[in-house]
Image (cartoon, rainbow, N blue to C red):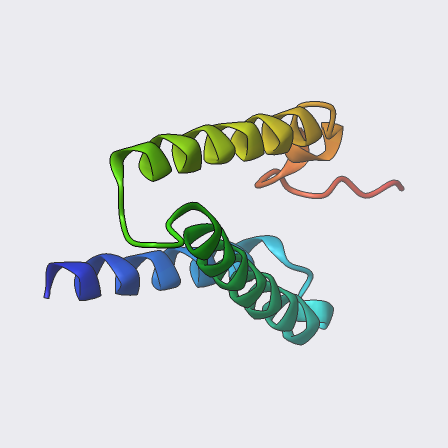
Length: 97
C-alpha cells in the first residue's frame, strides 16, 4: 500500500508539472513524450538491475549499481546546469508592444 501511494503521487506530480509548464497547443505531444521517457527509464532500470545482479542480489552488486547511478546522476547534472531556459520556468511570458 505504501509503495502504491508513493507511485501514485509521483505520477500525479509529474503530470501536474507537465500541465503547468507545457504549451497548451502542444500538451498532447508533451504528455506522449513524458510517458515515452518514463517507459524508457523503467526499461533502463530493469537492464541495470539485470546487469548488476546477474545471480541474485549481493552487496557488491548493490555497490556497483550505486556507483553506476551516481555516474548517471552526475552526467544529468552536468547536462542540466548550462540550460538557461530553466530559470524562466513558471514566470509569465513577456510580450512586446
